[in-house]
Amino acid sequence: MAYPVVAIVGRPNVGKSTIFNNIVGDRISIVEDIPGVTRDRIYARAEWLTREFRMIDTGGIEMSDEPFMSEIKQQAEIAIDEADVIIFMVSGREGLTDADEQVAKILYRSDKPVVLAVNKVDNVEMRNDIFDFYALGFGDPFPISGTHKTGMGDLLDAIVAHFPSDADGQDDDTVRFSFIGRPNVGKSSLVNAMLGEDRVIVSDIAGTTRDAIDTKFTTPDGDEFTMVDTAGIRKRGKVYENTEKYSVMRAMRAIDDSNVVLMVLNAEEGIREQDKHVAGYAHEAGRAIIIVVNKWDTLEKDNHTMKDFEDLIRSEFQYLAYAPIVFVSAKTKQRLDKLPAMIKQVNDNHQRRIQSSTLNDVLMDALALNPAPNMNGKRLRVYYATQVTVQPPTFVVFVNDPELMHFSYERFLENQIRKAFDFTGTPIKIIKRART
Image (cartoon, rainbow, N blue to C red):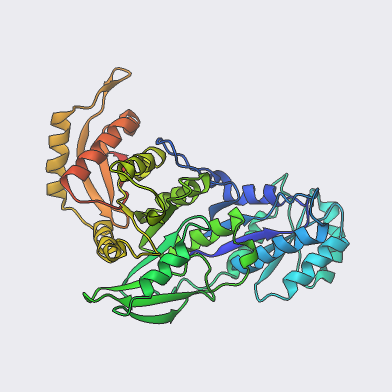
């Protein structure tokens, strides 16, 4: 499902990043014991009263080169285009400013709900000074303090009240997939190439919560798919297509909407840091993943070119060892016919369930092959395991002490499970739990 997106916008030095950090808390970082998983600080997931949502911080405006109002307008337009709810941040310490009023004019013309937050209200006496902000036209201002973390509950209540309903309209049983990746890797060309075949039946279906349009099509073999609108092909605001925060937010929304994501790399340019940002989020979100290397026709190749590029991918994306790699060309349509079957396969693996008895047979064989080592004079005892959910397949392993299972031994168990069952294209999660 697509999670609501909340953006913070306002003039510089009103405390946007502080409030962002207060809302997302420790969720701002990815903790992963495999190198290569990276996450940009400008976005994160958050939760309030059982409602999960995505946060984007539009802070860090540089004032040196660009005109003041141009920068504010760009940040506000990013928020308007991508957010379901906008936090308009002002400062109670400086009071109402001309810059606040200019931001308000931009936001007021949008159809998005706006929650007005007056930051830096650090004591009770300062609450009497917030009434001037009613002139902005966004209803009751919410006094908060990023420093003392006060008023956050009322602010979050107001934000959640504006969220779309949980019903996302995705009640069909087609496989939903999307192309993700940084700008200019050829996502749009791949979309057009896949949908441009005369043999494919195509129809447009309405987007769930926004103006995005998802495309439903049927292959000659009768397999039905829904292609999730990814790179904003039909969206306005292309002037910001090359800004990292904008493209990452679009990728996040596409990932949330998809069963399978196709991570697109540019064969001409190789692997960039932003590729890792986007892929890291898809991995953390637990989606099935296929790595698609586009523009393969542009390289001069010998007998080792494909193998060398695959080795580079495996080295840079060690946490995506489970993801199959396919080398394609949107221009020549090379190997594009392989994608539907591959998408269907990894989606099936993403939903695969293993019987507990069969799973534990594999687990016991793994323990006999490689008994758990001692840690601090204690030995890990693994009693049994069971699968608790799918998408991604998630296994609970009951042990005597979860602290005794080193991440390397957990990875060993995962590898044994993968050897016994086909989980190509999907991450799997192992949860350690003490037997009671």
